[in-house]
Length: 113
Length: 114
Image (cartoon, rainbow over all chains, first blue to last red; front, side, top):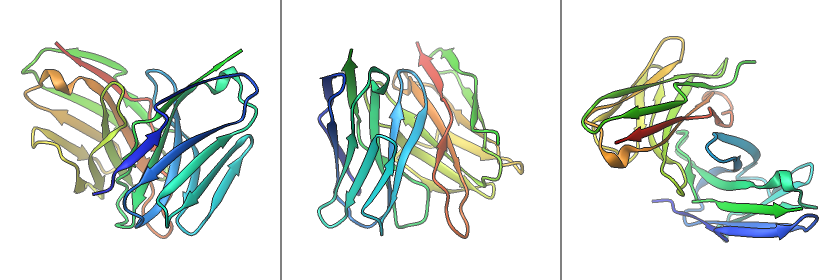
């Protein structure tokens, strides 16, 4: 059974800092790994999706990496802004082909002005 | 392109009642999944529907059931509501076929059971 862990559970940084969010998973037989953003009481917004054959994906100030052999992914946020404050979730999709994502509990990020 | 829409946005029910949540898939998607997200937790997979049939289920009791309609919209039904059913219920749609698309989530339905 896939288990996904995210560290830290919460993070508070001043505006402008670069930061790294960590995600680990126990079963390396994944089809892809996806990072989501969730604002309080809202749904999930997909940020980046890394296929199992890829090492990283970039979108603007966000960069996500994937190391299947070690069961780890990181989300790097450059030059953080107060608008980045949200909960960040990572989720692994198994090789089974079903759309059954296994999520971590998320990292709650607060970026202060 | 219309995204995933869910209704209602909020709902309050009493323990023992039944509830139906609705989801309209994103245009072009043929698969719908439902997730339950308790406060402070990550979403937990409930079940998935493909071509109007359930083809995957998480660790949820039979009182959680669903439907997918020919237009790929979906319903989640929960019978005999319990206090622990209070959560944000998220619907996600995707295209499964030659090349799978990422999941697209709706904004969820916040269910409170009193």
